Image (cartoon, rainbow, N blue to C red):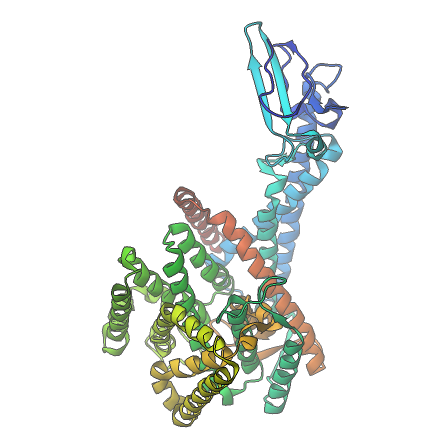
Length: 612
């Protein structure tokens, strides 16, 4: 007897046929399917209902040939583009890594274009492909061989309404399904963006001009952006829900956003007068590294490899490719290195003895131990260089603008040393967060009169402490301030936290413009060097402006629009490729790591061969 559909209200119709004519999925192109009141059904692959087997193979071959032709054309176009870029490049002595990554970019673009063309042409050339792996209406495929020597193919749908949602077979080109094109598209777009980065900062295509040093223009632009930001004021939380908890995600992203905008404006206008404030902004970023990561590990207790590797990918994927493409050292983009290092610090602090993290004494003891290790590393002479000497190849920096610094680890020591304590303060704040939240709620529960007095006392005290800090430390000259910054930067951060969360109204609102900017701070930090401004060359700082138009403000508007759009696109691409490269299981991470290591070695070998 033929097999019976084990589930579903309206089983698909069956056709019983001899064993010599089984159902062949590669032949289930749209012409070989029949529509009935019961929905779609597979039909035997005989001459009357399906194209001959040879014809079907020919249909499958045509999209693959089109893919190869399109990829070949893309590679040819890419080669001519590289020749043109080389003719206007300011540097002609490329490293093996640069040549290898250029080949990788070309292959990514060619692979995407070829598969895109193949997938596009598949249904138009009569090749139906294979059943979609995510077909919402397909519930089962069962091919049974019964004692009578007959095969039966049974497909079932869950109900009458689901049969119309069955998608057509999915095109597959060289093993790549159409549903898997997202990663190829992201890789190709990323390759194009990296080419644009090189074109902007390493060629003569775009002019460069001197910076305009004008405090009036700087503060006027900051005021204008703040005005626009106030126009994007929103309530935190989902629709119909008002969130008054302190330090909710939108608020911290807003904090990052407005600091980042002032940070890049500081570079654009060379506004050295606010150097001390910029140091505080960077300290606040590092504080968030301690606060955010400790909160995650303390609450979620998730110390899995996938989560940690995804964080490392987020911090270093983009900067790694920029370093290779532009032949710059990692420490030029020191923010990425600092966040990576202090993220490791938080991880090990929380992971060691993590089964006792709910014990207050143990948790505080681990934070104290982290403080002790930090003091030993940074404040005991000789220890820092002894520990980091093996990493000089990665963390060393050779500044062409300051050849007097012969110690390659000087930059790493200086940058990380300025904020070597504030990440620990971030962990302490995260640990104390429940207490802080309870105190704020207790104030809100007070009678109106007492509540007003309590808030006034809190705000007045915070302002007094802030005023004392400004007078005592903040107004010092740059070099004197740097000496006290590592030990005092937590004070203004604490003051800001108190003032920003002093009332329920402040906690419940955020400026969406700055929150959006806060999501792409890493990308805007890196790209400002190369597509918003222009550097002095290899390992160079952004000392010049990118000039497209003669009008200063119009040029700023146009260049900034491209800069922010590409920053957002890189952010999205990083997430898409992270989900492919860093799966959620350890075995998948190991396999992908081996594949990426082999690919890196192969492309580097190609670069060595090309360099000759």
